[in-house]
Image 1 (cartoon, rainbow, N blue to C red):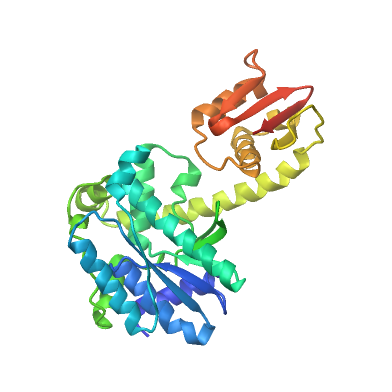
Image 2 (image 1 turned 135 degrees about the vertical axis):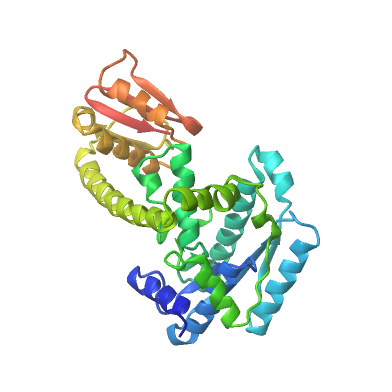
Length: 346
C-alpha cells in the first residue's frame, strides 16, 4: 500500500467518512486529486461493499480540452465497469446569468450535479448517499489563506471540514473530503505509481483566479521570504480552529434549546418562526449570541448570506441600543423583539 493510499484510508477511518455499504457519489474531473480518490475508493469498494457513482461536469470553459477530459473520465470509469454521469453546463453563460464569477459558476454547476445524482440514487435505492470530493491538504491551506485575506472569523479559519451535512432542495447529503490530510505531491506520486495518467488543466498554471494567484505567486513568496512551512502552518491552524468551532457550536446548540420559548400571535399559517427569550439571548456573550442567531435562522431556512453588518444590526435591537424593534435579513427573513421575546420569522 502506497503512502498516499495509507494516509487516505487513515483519514477515512479516523473521521468515519465512509461506512460499509455506502453509496458514494464522487466528483470526477479527471485531474490528479479526483482520479486518485476514485482509484482508492475503487480499491475499497469490494471490502466495504461500496457502490460508487462517478459524476463529471463539462464546464465548457476550454473547448476541445474539456471534451478530452470528459473522454478520459468516461474511459477510466468504463474500464472499471462503471458508468459516468456526465453533465454539460455553459458556466460562462451561467456566471453572466447569475452575476457571479466563472469560478463560482463552475462550483455551482458541480455541486448541483452531485446533489442531483445523490437524490436520484437515494430515491432509487432507499439508501443514504454521500458525496466525495477531492480537496487535498494544499487546497485546505489555500482556502484558509484566501479567507484570511478577505477577512474572516474563527469558523472561516477552520477551513473545509472533513465532513459536513449540506441541505439542498433535493435533500440533505453528507459531503466528505478523504484527501484533506494528503498533500498534492503525494497525490501526484500515487497517480504516477498506479499509471493513472490524469488530465492536466492548463488554467491551473495561469493567474486567472484568486486561488491560482495564491498558489502560484503569494504562497511561494511567503515560503521564500518568511516561512518555508507556511502551508503546514495554515493546515495546523485550521485544525485548531476547527476544534474550537466544534465546541462553540455544541455549546450553541445547548443554550439555544434553553432559550426557546412558546410564541402565539396572529401569523400566516405557513410562516416559519422561532421564538427565544430576548433578555437571556441579550445577556449571552457576543460570540455565543451571534451563533444562536445564525442557528435560529438556519432552523427556519436561512443558512447563508447573513453578513456581519446584519448581526451587528441584530445586536442593536437585542441590546436596546436603538429604538427600532425589527431587523430585516435577506430573502424575506426578519428578527423582531418585544414583550420579552426575540422572534425569528420568515
